[in-house]
Length: 99
Length: 147
Image (cartoon, rainbow over all chains, first blue to last red; front, side, top):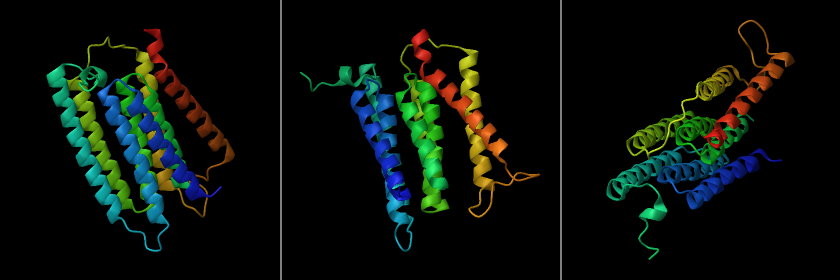
């Protein structure tokens, strides 16, 4: 099988497993971990795509990584604030949208 | 070929970390898997990109670990020396293997050790060590059931 195809598949597996964890878990820390897995999978797919270019370019990887980690830092701050306000990190207990 | 190996083991470690019920081993497995995926990205695109992904995500994971220590839910810590040792040996073994491959791998020749070329027996022993480490990972993931 083509090596690039396998790498893209591995990136897809990472992204899907992260998505499943985000959907299934009751712990905000696990949700942050799942988001990291999604980001890593998409970065792997992006790297494969950039590798297939005639002249590989690093700039998109640098940009995407910086933006992803900045957004993750914001999410960690929100997580801490949620814990301070609601005294729990269970998103189902925190959620006010269920009525 | 090596980027495929790194990406494969990184994926396994990250999925193992996501499936682990206890947060501390999950974070450590995620850190290990992130390093492997960053190495794969570094081999695919550029060393700079791989280093950046590795360092930046390591920083994010350290922040996550610190946050976990701050907001840790009340839970009984399971101080099991076998558990801790299995985790330490697993992480050390994989990092040692990664360092060996990263510094000694060359596409045109075999893995060269300090005194001789790597033989089939060495590969079998490496496979055995990997099997032991994966068994340790299974023990880590199933640790919750004994509480």
